Image (cartoon, rainbow, N blue to C red; front, side):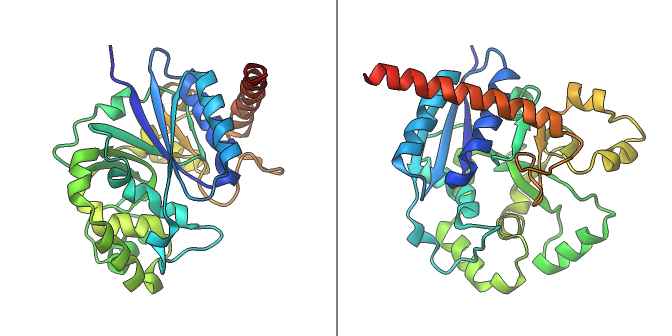
Length: 286
């Protein structure tokens, strides 16, 4: 009997619907697994949290909401595209002090289409984290990022991060992290990723993005990079996490990406499940 997989998400109320789609895909494509979802937030209202709890119970997922004090991030760079919530994933090991072993952070804009267990049980070789890079060593932006952040390793995408919680607690100094964010605001293009790579890149094991953090915008790029191996059939059989990076999101009107129909399918499954979960909750409350 496997231990439950601990999942971490951070978002505001606007991203709860995509998070429901992500969780539906996770449960459907990980039969026999049990999950606990930890939501780190600061602005989600009580009614929405109750609805999310009912939805997760309907899926058979344990749900725990953890409120974050926004004053902890006073002075840290934030914008409409990069709200304060993007920093919460980096504090997760300290916020979730009772969670031991492994925990998997997932952005809400992902689909899980194959088992997660191989990633969760990966050998981290003593490191605190595992993550994927969307830029290979030869990409010109890789060199720019190394100069910009004064690092020597990969530039990791922080939409999917496996954490060894006890090792990560020792690695992450919250006060030092926020001081770095304030002192280097002018240089940061992608605040969460820049912070992660600058401070914790050396503590991170790189895993293949084509398996664990597939950029859904770049189907043709993957096909070329793999010499034609990563066809749609290959992705459906081998890739575990599709990540809908960038501004153009699959739940928005007008999205026409390669995986549009797949996402819309899970979106409808999640919407119907949410309706049933809320209806059952209202029945119990009468």
